[in-house]
Image (cartoon, rainbow, N blue to C red):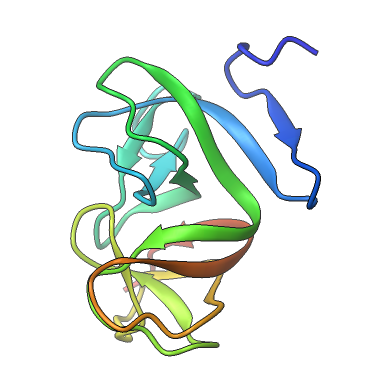
Amino acid sequence: INRDVPGTRCFDDQGNEFIYLLGVASTVIGSCVTYGLNGTTAWQTALSVTGAKGPVAFALAAPLAAQWGWYQIYGFASVLANGSVVAGAPLYSASTGKVDDAIVSGDQIDGAICAATIASAVLGAAFLSYPFMNHQG
C-alpha cells in the first residue's frame, strides 16, 4: 500500500482508521475538519464551522497549509473541545475546528460522541464512526 496517495485509508493495531488529506492553515492536533463536499477538491480539508456539510475527520498533527497529513475517521480519537463536554454526549461543530456538546440545530456531527468527560477547552476523547455533518437548520 502506498500510504502517500490522497484519500488512502489505513488502520492501526487498535482498529482505528485514518485517511490521508490535504491540510489547511491553523490546523492543530485534534482539529475537526470537513473534506470533499464543502466546495473543496476531493481531499482538501477545511476547519469545521457551524453550518458545514460533508465528511468529518480529526487531525493527528498540525500540518501547514498545502501539506498532506493523516486524519482520524474511526475509533477512539483526540478531539479539540471548545469547552467542557459531558461523556456520552453527541458532538456539535463549535468555533472553527472545535467541537462541543451544546445543542445547535443543524450542527451535529453524526457519528461522533464524547468518550470521556472533557473538563475544559482542551484535547479530549471521542468515539468516531465515519463522522459526517449534514447541516439542515
